[in-house]
Length: 168
Image (tube, rainbow, N blue to C red):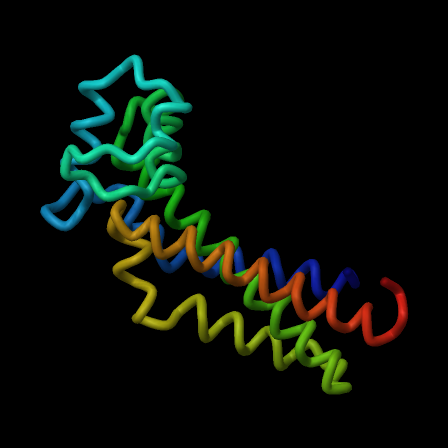
């Protein structure tokens, strides 16, 4: 990574933190996954292995999301400010991944200017469609799905590019 790209990545992270700063201090609302939070609070001795086995108790099966709530319970005590902060950090990470994805695609097409991926990442960071996923604790599912999807796309493009050039 070039030094200029490092500054742009830092700017993108601060941009996301600046935009979503008020959300950090928001309380839980009716859209947040309050039932899941209460379930985690009331089941202190949950086995991480048992979380992988689906139950028919009415909760949807999302073990990785539940793991993050259990981690929040043990680290922050399920305090809503820290849970919102985690969502903001996930969105900042996704914004940086959008920057790297756009940079990777730009390089494939021979565009070596950093302005194209930077504009794509800024648009992703400030676009209002992401607001619900970042502000609501229950939106963590979308943020995590976006994170894994963006990582997979970056790795797929890099892998295909390396295979085409004969490195694999």
